[in-house]
Image (cartoon, rainbow, N blue to C red; front, side, top):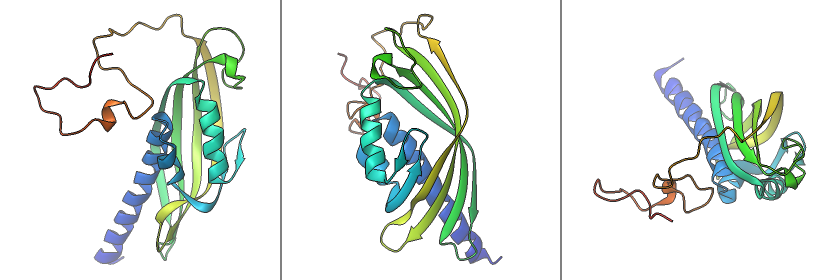
Length: 191
């Protein structure tokens, strides 16, 4: 493989990795435009309880995440296999999803009860990516492959000091603050 082919391959892998991470960050921050931007318009996502196009996926995620109080997606073991022409790729990403969910939603991960529960879901995203002239690398097909899930009460969670910067699931999160923050500035206004 020539040096220019190696560079093209590394750039493709980097672009694909950015999309994988953007999806997770978009879901965790409820940035639905970011989530949608990870998919081609004719893509299909098979996400367990949802199978369909990207617009339907975003609608489904919005409804579900109305009851998700905290969400973190952790990606590991990302493997990317590129086609010889560097126009398609097959990826596998391990994903550990950690969420606090209000069970009143009827969410199958949350179970039943009156108190929020802590859910952990281990899955893999097996994706087909395609590079297109105007859109670049995006997901063409995603299959969420489930390994296991666990649900626990949140009664043993330790309260966080309210003077600390708290995570938010919207544009009020520190991620979206004007930057660069100066050393002398507080992270965010306290509520």
